Amino acid sequence: KVGWYNAVLQPAFHLSYPDDTLAFVVISTPSMFDKALKPFVNKERLKIIRDPVDQCISHHLSRVKEKFPDQRVDVMFDYEMLPSRKPKFLAQTAAHVAGAAYYYQRKDVKLDPWGKKKIFGVCIHPKYGGWFAIRGLLLFPDIQVPFLEQPAPVDCVSTEEKRIQLLELFNFHWQDGRYRDIIEVKERYSEEQKAYFATPPAERFRLLGLSQEAQ
Image (cartoon, rainbow, N blue to C red; front, side):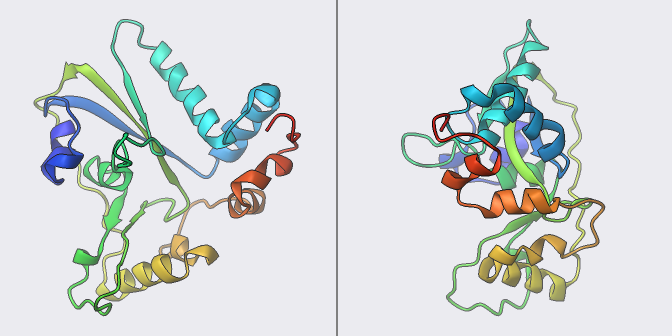
């Protein structure tokens, strides 16, 4: 429910829908690369003009909207900004309140070792660890769900020591991706997918076999 999200944030970040409005957080799993992105690139090769992943997600979410012709469905993407340069929604907070993944933050550590350093939080999924991404929000403004019960996210990094390690790895060594394996995972990115996301966005077209003209 939108109200779960608004309840934990400052008014400046609130979504302007009634509290009981139904919303879905959309995440991509490791298999998205082979099952969705590569087929999309093969099919839409000449139409890809910005980030292929963003366009692929947009394509699939617009197909979801088509499944509900009689409903209003509002879609927000994780990369969208308001004119104020604030994100349209805070993806990690949304995932946490929806029970999709646990958003580990500095406040989850009792004996904080970081002093004045800025420490960013990170979501961990109970099945995929850090090998997933939060892609968007689907909102159904005409559907009110007053009796929906809030599911708690799975606290899979439950010890103080592990939480410190997670936040250390994410904040100071995020490039090597070790934070993603803070728990035992069921599935992770393929080597090809790791290489793709490790490549600067402008060079990713080449990896997917897209010409510069398409870019």
